[in-house]
Amino acid sequence: MTTKQQVRAVLERLPDDCSLDDVLYHLYVLRAVERGRADVQAGRTLTHEQVERALREKWVLGAGR
Image (cartoon, rainbow, N blue to C red; front, side, top):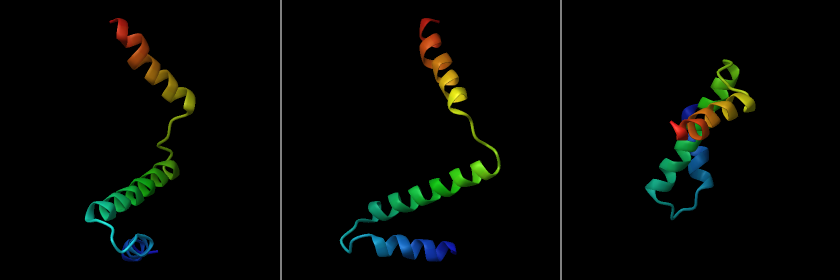
């Protein structure tokens, strides 16, 4: 599906009285999902354990410093 087709599909799913902010939000989400899928395909992901460790180091262990 081309980008133009994706935009049209988003517009078709939205109600006729949607705002420009609604359109922009849905396009933003569509783009974020595309980027996430590209990251997965390229191997740019972290395991749950890696994320948990990083958050723990930043917020729990870093709080006492």
